[in-house]
Image (cartoon, rainbow, N blue to C red; front, side):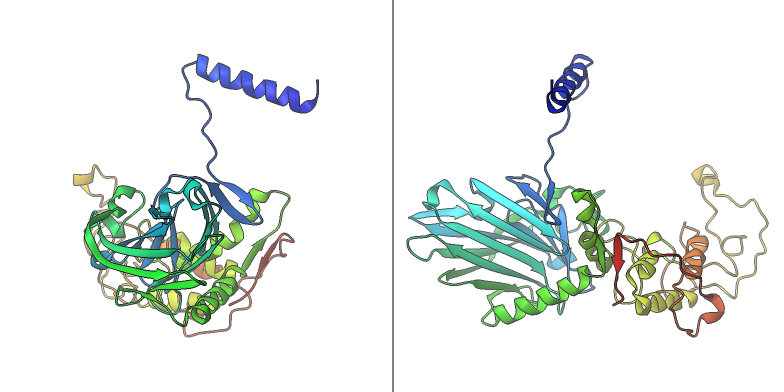
Length: 388
């Protein structure tokens, strides 16, 4: 009996035992690595892979199939694509074949359908980095005549979302389309076509699309090149580009946020600020630490002794009251540059730890007295980081 046969037998036995014991059988693997990208075929998850462009609230939610949601609070949109071919109108998110690939800030779809008689569609989506919006490149081939395509924008099913559409709280169905189309854009795809979502929240055929797309792709490539991971494990090798793109999504232009699409809110000492050292973003580290240095309380003496826990919350949190040992001089507040906005978190420990962990290559700044440089350890051979 070969090793593979033994492994297969053990897997079947394990599955049988799990079913016999009333446990759920192993789940189907939806995503797999290929050439450093995360790939799925004929997937069904919707609005679960966000793309971040300009460092603002706006993001492009993508799915396993080409249906999208551009989140921007009250101006959010659902965007879908349809194609006319051989007398039929086909939504591109319901084709008989769809391969979706993700690589740090870009989603690419390869589409085929039984009714297309050998025709193929390739659609590539990115959030734009140079201004708020998104860009799509659409390539068609193998059709008897150039197909007509439609891009349709509608309002989202839910317009007021919890914590900026937080993945942990907001159902994915909130991003589905609702109501009549706000805009329908139609064109004949006789060559590569570029569709742009502008900062004014309108869809246009971009006549300079090839140039704009190349600029956005060059920015994206520079971004994901900050972190490359090379190991014998293809699953781990996908993480460099993904982590670099997510790290950029955490940045709001001044400070690191708690999360990209979960708890997208400023907090002084959450884990995000560590990425500045990992990715060599010294300018962003300076901005973050300087902003929160100005958030330190300096005019509230600690006059209330310990313990001062909140009895309403069963003593599980500190009482949110100025003058306690926590909410007094030295406390770093929630918002950058604001020394009068408390939070239920005590972020001082994390903030100072991130501050002390600054790279040895950092040059002195106005906050040098708070920021001693630390000696850097040996580089890990399998991980490459490049400064921005």
